[in-house]
Image (cartoon, rainbow, N blue to C red; front, top):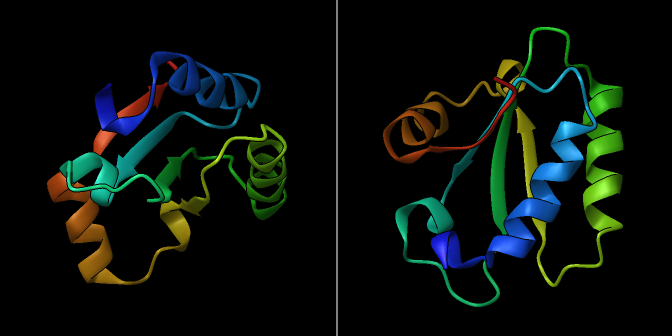
Length: 101
Protein backbone atom coordinates (compact mmCIF):
# COMPACT_ATOMS: atom_id res chain seq x y z
CA UNK A 1 0.00 0.00 0.00
CA UNK A 2 1.87 3.00 -1.28
CA UNK A 3 1.54 6.12 0.93
CA UNK A 4 -0.64 4.09 3.30
CA UNK A 5 -3.47 4.34 0.78
CA UNK A 6 -5.00 1.45 -1.12
CA UNK A 7 -4.82 1.49 -4.92
CA UNK A 8 -8.56 2.06 -5.00
CA UNK A 9 -8.35 5.10 -2.70
CA UNK A 10 -5.50 6.53 -4.79
CA UNK A 11 -7.53 6.01 -7.97
CA UNK A 12 -10.60 7.71 -6.47
CA UNK A 13 -8.54 10.73 -5.36
CA UNK A 14 -6.84 10.99 -8.76
CA UNK A 15 -10.24 10.91 -10.46
CA UNK A 16 -11.04 14.26 -8.84
CA UNK A 17 -7.93 15.80 -10.43
CA UNK A 18 -8.66 14.19 -13.80
CA UNK A 19 -11.97 16.08 -13.90
CA UNK A 20 -10.19 19.40 -13.30
CA UNK A 21 -8.55 20.56 -16.55
CA UNK A 22 -6.60 23.30 -14.77
CA UNK A 23 -4.75 20.85 -12.51
CA UNK A 24 -1.52 19.91 -14.24
CA UNK A 25 0.13 18.12 -11.33
CA UNK A 26 -0.50 17.11 -7.72
CA UNK A 27 2.50 16.64 -5.45
CA UNK A 28 2.08 14.53 -2.31
CA UNK A 29 4.23 15.65 0.61
CA UNK A 30 4.35 15.34 4.38
CA UNK A 31 4.18 12.12 6.35
CA UNK A 32 2.56 10.09 3.57
CA UNK A 33 5.34 10.97 1.14
CA UNK A 34 8.07 10.41 3.74
CA UNK A 35 6.57 7.13 4.93
CA UNK A 36 6.14 7.95 8.63
CA UNK A 37 2.35 8.36 8.43
CA UNK A 38 -0.12 6.95 10.92
CA UNK A 39 -3.64 5.66 10.25
CA UNK A 40 -5.18 9.08 10.87
CA UNK A 41 -2.57 11.12 9.00
CA UNK A 42 -3.93 13.71 6.61
CA UNK A 43 -3.14 13.80 2.91
CA UNK A 44 -1.01 16.81 2.00
CA UNK A 45 -1.18 17.77 -1.67
CA UNK A 46 0.24 20.75 -3.50
CA UNK A 47 -1.45 21.43 -6.82
CA UNK A 48 0.23 22.97 -9.84
CA UNK A 49 -1.40 24.61 -12.82
CA UNK A 50 -0.88 27.93 -14.56
CA UNK A 51 -4.62 28.60 -14.78
CA UNK A 52 -5.51 27.26 -11.32
CA UNK A 53 -7.46 29.76 -9.21
CA UNK A 54 -8.95 29.93 -5.73
CA UNK A 55 -12.40 28.88 -7.00
CA UNK A 56 -10.84 25.75 -8.49
CA UNK A 57 -9.13 24.88 -5.21
CA UNK A 58 -12.37 25.32 -3.30
CA UNK A 59 -14.21 23.11 -5.78
CA UNK A 60 -11.51 20.43 -5.49
CA UNK A 61 -11.65 20.55 -1.68
CA UNK A 62 -15.42 20.06 -1.74
CA UNK A 63 -15.12 17.16 -4.18
CA UNK A 64 -12.46 15.48 -2.04
CA UNK A 65 -14.55 15.92 1.10
CA UNK A 66 -17.54 14.42 -0.72
CA UNK A 67 -15.59 11.24 -1.45
CA UNK A 68 -16.50 10.10 2.06
CA UNK A 69 -13.00 8.79 2.72
CA UNK A 70 -11.66 8.56 6.29
CA UNK A 71 -8.93 11.11 5.55
CA UNK A 72 -8.54 14.84 5.88
CA UNK A 73 -7.00 16.69 2.96
CA UNK A 74 -4.62 19.63 3.11
CA UNK A 75 -4.69 21.15 -0.38
CA UNK A 76 -2.58 24.09 -1.48
CA UNK A 77 -1.67 25.85 -4.71
CA UNK A 78 2.03 26.21 -5.46
CA UNK A 79 1.59 29.88 -6.38
CA UNK A 80 0.05 30.71 -3.01
CA UNK A 81 2.72 29.09 -0.81
CA UNK A 82 4.94 31.83 0.59
CA UNK A 83 6.68 29.74 3.24
CA UNK A 84 10.14 28.98 1.83
CA UNK A 85 10.73 26.17 4.34
CA UNK A 86 7.51 24.46 3.23
CA UNK A 87 8.44 24.78 -0.45
CA UNK A 88 11.89 23.37 0.32
CA UNK A 89 10.27 20.45 2.19
CA UNK A 90 7.93 19.75 -0.74
CA UNK A 91 10.80 19.87 -3.23
CA UNK A 92 12.88 17.56 -1.04
CA UNK A 93 10.32 14.87 -0.10
CA UNK A 94 7.41 15.49 -2.44
CA UNK A 95 6.39 12.86 -4.93
CA UNK A 96 4.18 13.19 -7.99
CA UNK A 97 0.75 11.80 -7.08
CA UNK A 98 -1.01 12.92 -10.26
CA UNK A 99 0.22 14.34 -13.55
CA UNK A 100 -1.93 15.44 -16.47
CA UNK A 101 0.53 14.14 -19.03
